[in-house]
Image 1 (cartoon, rainbow, N blue to C red):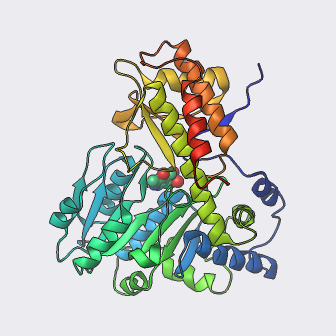
Image 2: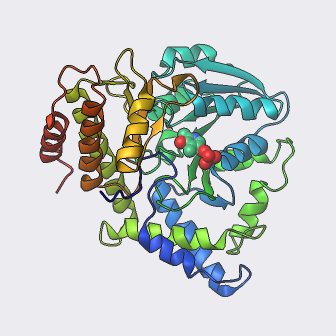
Image 3: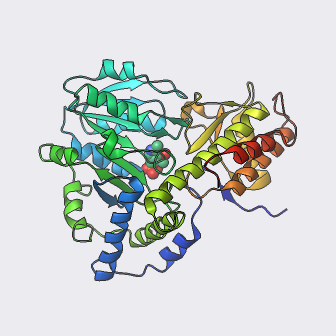
Length: 395
Ligand SMILES: *Cc1c(COP(=O)(O)O)cnc(C)c1O
């Protein structure tokens, strides 16, 4: 049979055709009125996509570049910072903050879980300058309670800035930067925005801008104050990734088009879309007898992490989907390799895609004779169909 290659990975995600066309047509110089108009429009649209009145900047890097920029711009050597981690991306915060000479306190929860507010409260010091966390930990499929952590920092009257890696949280989870007291919220192009890797973006609060007046960790290419100055003129400090910015504009237009041109509403629909695909996938997987890695109520909309049955290797499923259907899903990262696989819902996925992956998963699981109690054709699909039919956000 013909096998169409399909990405079901939480970054890169499937590309939006309109964005690919926009990239191909983006033959513009970056110090021209044409580019300034494009860049200014995209920066303004990004505010609606992030859901903030704060400044938003775009950097020519993958998401980790904006993570590093938030550390280099907001800290000084020896600053006490608090990293909340329960997965591979949380550990990246520890790595970056250590690289910039911070004194790093870590609240760690086991993979597949999240931390408690009591743990955070106990680790928060008077001197804590910044708290770093993920909105959704893509390596485990767990979503952390950003609203509650923001409230805790407020209640404790903490001076700490609150920096959130929303790289897979944006476009899959409801996040309210301004109301929840988030100081920096970070996104990446190859996730919910349905365009290739290469751009990161971040929203920055007034408190964070103030902090940058006194911090002195080294920074040059990722100097946020310099980028802000240039952005105000419709430009970036260095040659921007023009084609990706054109693609981003097309993607934001597409998202606005989901709600008659209203980008804020369109973003909410994109979040609902991911949540519906995630709920269908969870229902299918549990009906088939799989166990989910994330605790109930804290499952990410970005991706679902599904455990391989006891005594089996998740690589069987990852390889089976690839060889039989050219479907790319990701295995667990690091120590989680072999024990789970992850199906993405972030960005350009729809009902059809979700039904397709569930059908393919049934085929692979049955062919591999996985030791699952309810393994017959249709068990997962029936559960997914019911979930879709009963979803109040589906109209
Ligand atoms: C994808 C991702 C990143 C960034 O990874 P890059 O490869 O640098 O784009 C960071 N955090 C999370 C939660 C992610 O999913």
